[in-house]
Length: 159
Image (cartoon, rainbow, N blue to C red):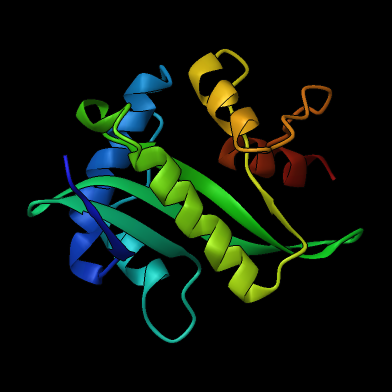
């Protein structure tokens, strides 16, 4: 199956959100997605976009995305963060994940970043194996730490 990878356009955000929701279902968090098409359109486009998104099209349909944004490491400097690399279920195993990751790595190289980082769920062995085969170091001795919206409010109320 053929596909084309390009930078996302504002009009792609409905399809991007559909893939985000598909990932949430796969990751057993079907009700966790709060972001809207309007949020994606506002935050990804305009004078100061908060993210860059690559989309993969097959025919006229978006079948994969890679969404990235810049971070800063006190040890390394500029870091490109890969928030999500999503390949629709019917396109898995076609090489599309590799093509999207290739695009992200080339983009990071063009930006001159010192590192590209992302997270992967510890039970997602297919993804872990994929990333390790690409040369990524899956740091199993690190834990991701989050304060969600309610925890932020509780924290603020406690100080």
